[in-house]
Image (cartoon, rainbow, N blue to C red; front, side, top):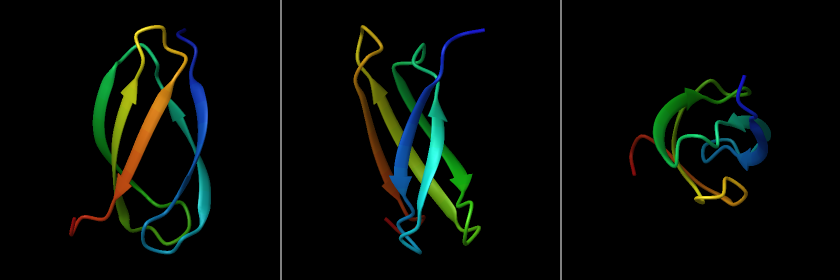
Length: 64
C-alpha cells in the first residue's frame, strides 16, 4: 500500500482545523470532501512535488 502524507487544513467555512490524508503518488489532485465538523463541501486542490516530499494544499468553498 502506498504511503500517505498526513496534513492539517482549516475549513474555509467554519475555520475548524482537521487532518486529511494525501496520496503522494498522484502529483496533481482536485476533489471535494465534506468538512468533518460543519459538513459543508470543501474543494481541495493538491500538488505534490516530484520526490513526493513537498505538498501544497489549497482549500476553497464551492462559491470560489
